[in-house]
Amino acid sequence: MVNLTINGQQHTIEAEPDTPLLFVLRDTIGLTGTKYGCGIGQCGACTVLIDGQATRSCQLPVDSVGTQAVTTIEAIEADPVGARVVAAWVGIEVPQCGYCQSGQVMAATGLLKETPKPTDDDIAAAMTNLCRCGTYNAIAAAVRQAAA
Figure 1 (spheres, rainbow, N blue to C red):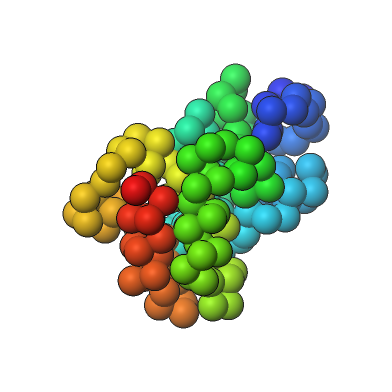
Figure 2: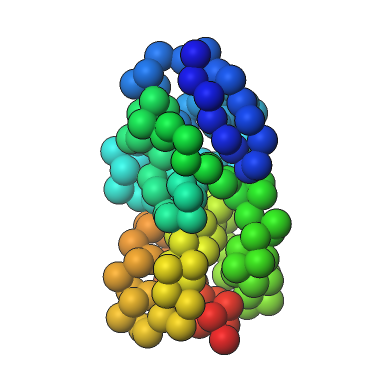
C-alpha cells in the first residue's frame, strides 16, 4: 500500500512500488489529464508538479513520491500561478491538437514557481516538453504573459 497526497487529497493505493506514478494517476485514481507520451521521460506529456517542481511522472516510481504533494492538471487552476498560466494559455490560444498541453502548462507553472520573472533563456531551458504541432513560440509567449 502506498499513501499519496494528490491535488490536496489523501489516497491509499495498492500498487507495486516500482509502478510509474503516471499509471497510478491515470489507471488507479482516474485522473486522465496527465498524458502518456513516450514512456521514457523525454516528451513531457506526463509532467506533474511534485512539491511545486515539474516532474515527468512516467519514469517516477510511485514509492519514491513519499510524503511529497502531487499536483496534476486537474487541480492546477487552484494554484494562483497555475491559474495565471492557464489564463495566458487560453488568452493566446496556445493549443492546436492539445495533447501535450497539460504537460506544457505544468512545466510552465513549475518554472514560474521557481523563477517568477524568467528570461527568454530561462524559458528555453525549462520548457523542454515536446509539441508535435510546433506551438513553441506561442508557449513562450504565454509563459512571458503569465510572468508579467
